[in-house]
Length: 545
Image (tube, rainbow, N blue to C red; front, side, top):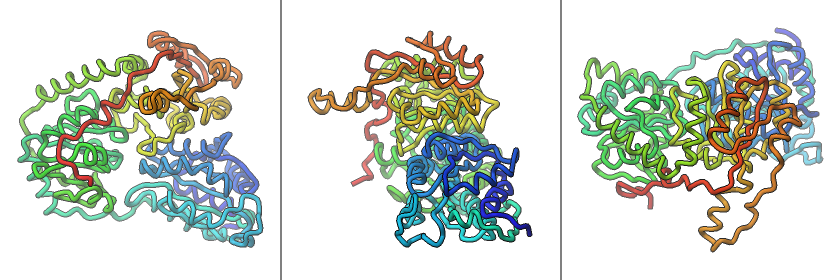
């Protein structure tokens, strides 16, 4: 045992669990935590932001792109509430984000004195968007509580967790016994009878289909092997993109998946909510659904599957591959390639302007580069129109649709992948949510390339106002700065583009430059609506009343 402060006990416990980067914003209740990080020296890379929301978004981007825990630290009350939008995003995308919050003095908690940043029942408040949360009430508790936080994120379904420590406990010195990090957690057993039943359905299906989500990211090679052996196309929308490379005929984007869904007789859903296919496209008695998920609450959500397997995706797929042996199905390359080409042509016909920009980004971004979208017109089309070749190469906000998440998230992606190129796209509206983090990008020399599509409006909102409300437009026109001059004022690189080809040249210049870059693309017309390839019509029976 060694004597240390509560703040030091937290930081040293983080190090024991493999944390090397913390995104944080200092404040009174975190003074002793930051002093502990100072003492830790090069053992911890500390990146401080200009707003609390960015700490958690950066931790989210770091986690989603690396598969490791993303760690952030904020002051209590308004600081934690500022981070809550990003924690919602991490919650909806099953991202392992550890949020460390300060707290008012332990003697004042629950008293209502009106201490700085006091909030009633902070643990209860944050419990709704975290998998687990706990207060550390003595330095000696820190190793156990930090270990439990990592266990919660590593077992079952990963989601954000929160630990907090009162400021006086962070300052308190006590004897602390540190614990080594442990990743040898028990797994759920795989039922051999369920494996046999699932394999029988898949081998005897006429047109089987696989749908993957983030729960299959760690088992991407097994998904590829099973898909190849049984010639089953694999559909992903956002988090599952790249599990099967987009240049494989077995990879199906969302609109291609819709066509397949209408004819398939067996669907193997791995680590996915299966929300849009079931709620929008439907299901009938001719469609057998096999659901594989480590989260038992997902299995019967929306409707009851024919077979539900609660276990780790990798373990289930290993068992399916072992049981399948050398069996190989007849090739579907000609059929699937033709469908893939037909769907691609339809996409380019209807959302060609967005695809022209995405094509250039894909051509200039190295094959191992990472793309971060945003809640914007080009971002929406990227969900089905942007090819990715490996898992974790396309980062999205998922169903939370948190406008403005993109820039700060991409900085976290960049921080976790300094050996790769990262391009992020934003609209002018969304970028302004976290534009102050240009300061962070320059200070820490994070070479992120961000493309801002500037049409001086919230395009989705304005389109709906014009279409739904007889053209009555309100609060959807925007007054923007000169983004190039703004970037340069921060010390970043700024480039202007007016079309896909001038954007191409700007991307090349940005990749050759040092530090972060902003590329402003002037857009004067409405992009065509991206929704025909997302809100696609029902092609089975409705399962929602």
